[in-house]
Image (cartoon, rainbow, N blue to C red; front, side, top):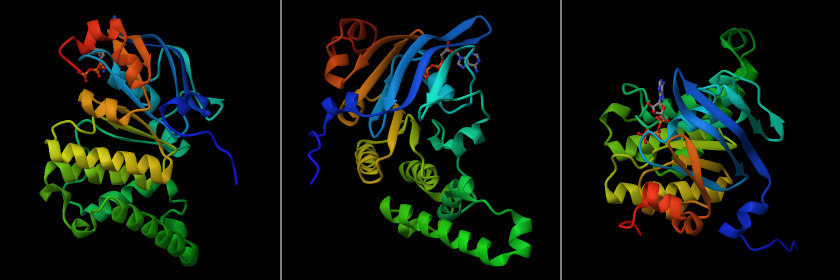
Length: 270
Ligand SMILES: Nc1ncnc2c1ncn2[C@@H]1O[C@H](COP(=O)(O)OP(=O)(O)OP(=O)(O)O)[C@@H](O)[C@H]1O
């Protein structure tokens, strides 16, 4: 039997690095959205990025997902420097994301929406499907099985045939999570997963995020404004303010950081 060290937030720094952001600077014309920021994301951890409005959190998530290319700095993923890539190439590397404003196909069923998440696993095109039916069919069955597993896991079986447009907000967010998971990502990016949710929906989403991390070992980086949620879910937190990094550490460490308290948490938060 192996003698692994006990898990927990303290264990996070000893895990292997999955992604490293080195001296990232991102400008939009005269605006410096990100100013020389470095941090890493370790395998299997839940890493939060927090900060006031306009701090540069979404810009950072967009750098990680390949939507934006920084003018300066390097992005390393799984031990290799990642060149400037198109978002679909980044997706093929094993990085999936959800969006702040839900981006699903309203007229399509839950099942079909989640299936679109498998696109990075579809190797056989329409031509191959026509002339070489066997392998294409096997691939389709495997994709279908993977999707059904995720649908079961996120407890959305009973709505699998329902058009997404008819679902309440909290369930739409869960379907978006299902679609991102269907890609079987190494790194899952969640852009404000709790935004607009009521307390019960937040509790459900928190549980699913923890379960995904636990059961699939998926590394998760998320932006979130609800501090209670961030402090409960995260192993480590990066704090941004005006494009700079002003804090980085466990929830307890950032909560006790005076610069973070001044810029963001304030004295009223606990
Ligand atoms: N596409 C863009 N073009 C020009 N400026 C941008 C663009 N995206 C972001 N910015 C600017 O970069 C800065 C950081 O914005 P960003 O959206 O990353 O912050 P944020 O921390 O995610 O804010 P919020 O919490 O309000 O979503 C802001 O000054 C914003 O106006």
